[in-house]
Every structure is written in C-alpha cells, then in structure tokens.
Length: 85
Image (cartoon, rainbow, N blue to C red; front, side, top):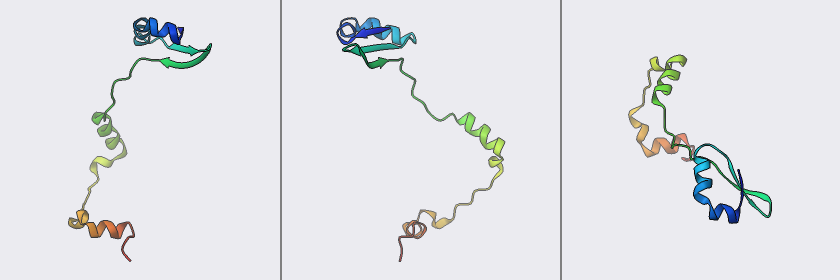
C-alpha cells in the first residue's frame, strides 16, 4: 500500500492496521518513498533452551570452568589488560 504523507496522516489508523496485518505500507513525499510502516517485532531475549542445545552439541556442557579466586581483583584486570608497567 502506498500513501502520501497527507493521506497517511489523515488515514493513519487504516495504514497502521494494514501494517499490523503484515502488509508493508510505504509513505511517500513528493511521489518518492519516504518511510515504511511495518509490523513491530516482539522484543527478543535469550533462548536458553537453544543455548543449552548448542552447548551440548559442542560438548561444552561437560567442560569444567575454573575461575581463580583473584579473578575479581582489580589488580588482576589491570595485569590482563596490560595496564601495569
């Protein structure tokens, strides 16, 4: 669906409803495409089930992770980053 800015402003609810149904709505300015209305995507997040599956496939679920006691020490961070002379 194509609408001029004036028409999109006048009939915005109709254009928004079309976009929500999945239709791409192009708003034109001086006959040229200016903006498009598309349906909003739901907010993404981590798919922890997928993460667990990938870890298992790669064999990372059996890996032992050892974090040294001094890991949170600022001096260790400076050493790792090469900031200490």
